Image (cartoon, rainbow, N blue to C red; front, side, top):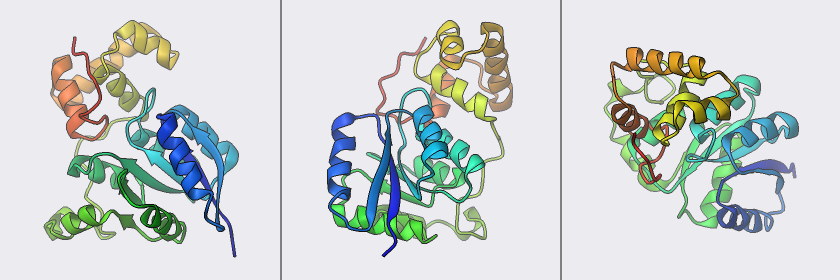
Length: 225
């Protein structure tokens, strides 16, 4: 029996420990690493080369959606299974757009989580039952040939996604520059490009877009400036 190696990416320690204890009971699943934010997840995925990444969607510094995108750019053979407390269509659609093979609600049973890990490891898709039923009702024109939701017309770069997340989390330009290790003027340029691309011209609007696009979860406490 081949062992499936798994990286756990979840910012809440108690949730991460719960998943670890649950998965350690399985003979064919091995936890090879953990990450508390999106940047750690990207670095760990490259270093540890896990078969499956169990990825929380809402994490600090870099959200799970963009972390998934960056991981799959470097390691396209990796399989990502997204985790969220919410099943909003925007989050599910964005996750599949970024390359995730599955989307699980955090209240999913242990049996279903293990089944999902095995399925995505084998290249199959897996969605929590409530999400799967809703996706089946999507109009066929909204799906591509692979059964995934078509990409939105506006495409943001990885750096723009990072800047947008930090803006939506209430970070000022100086804080954003410090977090990303870039100059304040560079942050200002990225902000300008975001507003031009999205045709949104205030922070509140960018924050609403970030929520609707699944870049951050609506449950995240926001400070709109």
